[in-house]
Image (cartoon, rainbow, N blue to C red; front, side, top):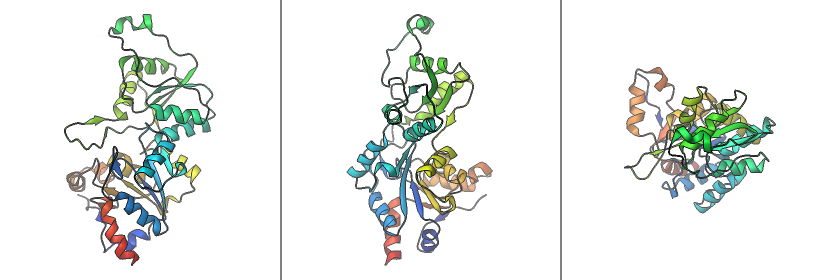
Length: 309
């Protein structure tokens, strides 16, 4: 049995603030859910920034560009420009450009990936719905593969279909074709508790099961995301805090990259999950426990006001 992580309170707030210079914050489930801001998370970040901390936004959501995220931040009174944002779509484009990739990308995903690839001049297939083919046994008579594809990028795609899986897996029959996943999140934090909204992980698994080889994962918890982020913003890992709402992406990302970690309970992970992981005999669960936790990012507001005064 492991000890519960520290609840961030007055007794440890000074120690906490002295332990980092940079903040990486997840977005969905920490700052907002969909188009709804979570409490006063914008005010909380502003107070952290006022204490001299650098704040960067790091998201596995590949459906938007950095510019679109910057506009969303502005609409919710978060201080951010596109250089402060690292999305899995941008990181994927950055990675391919860094590798001097000069072929075409087949995208099983959304416009965020396509637009970020456009920014670095990498050719790609179109995104959006594809005509459904009812009988899989006749698909070879009506489908032709796009020539020149050297990579398949899989992210969240609300238009996931059988033909798209056929295209992605058929390109990947070539062992030299790169298989890249923007992220493997299982589901989205959602305000409607009756619905479970699948995320990119299920799309990635559809392809992986067929081709029988793992993808290169760009987003959290992969170290790739931090390496790419550090190319843009020189960061000392030991002086960087990761704030997130999910054990197996945000907190594991922090652990993989030797960052400080803080979990908030406004997204995927709930208090009962935290208690279960702490009381479990499973060492893997213990390794996913954060350094600190808060019920909500809002809760830091009074702590910081007291501290700064």
